[in-house]
Image (cartoon, rainbow, N blue to C red):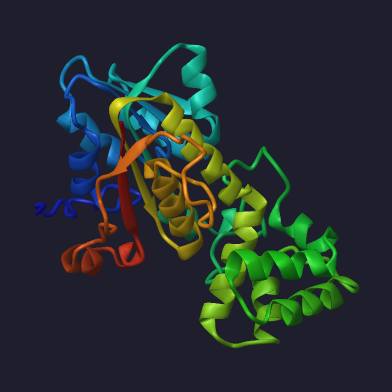
Length: 313
């Protein structure tokens, strides 16, 4: 399937949405259907979905970030087809089932927005100094600084290794604990300097920041909950579209879809199926959709994106 480019006209937007044309094309199968954008962000994907909907179409947009919520309420003021909800996408099934609502499609875009990355006060970026927070919603959970100043050395090492896939995890955790004995870690610059005392590679810094952010926001468990919840509220023929940005996320999405498509989960040594599992979804994209060279040239942060699509049967 070929797509026309829709990566222009971002000058007045705080974030450049990834794979916009592809997302809307795969997601919207019924023009007057009901769709869920589980990661509303700054409304880029939502706008593309709205463009493909008829007058009776509906979108529920979820996001934890209060800045994103405020921005979208202003951007989409007067848009009756959109309902904005400040909540995690891991709660979307509970909220929809409570109202007996089923969806024709669910979108989960797992990346950070450019505004989140570029705002030093949020603590996501290692290229500028700011408080070590990293929470999507600053009113929920503990900031990254608290995690680094209170968790045991072994716990910090496990987080860096499991969520950042960084082989120097134990050395970095040891330096973090040594540093905090004299002074609590409170800024991104302090953390960068600690990491640099072990390795000067920028990829090591990126992996550690990714790992801590994932732990602070419980991202992988939230993703698992959201995938299960999305499947439960999809109508027959409804589609699940997920855009991931690193291997940990993509692996979870791929395995979830494969398991939902399979008709048997019995151990390989059992000659006859005894589980009686039914196929729940079918894979639409056997290989993940990735951004075009044109899109990457205009938005380099899109280069790691992978989009997978499945349909409820």
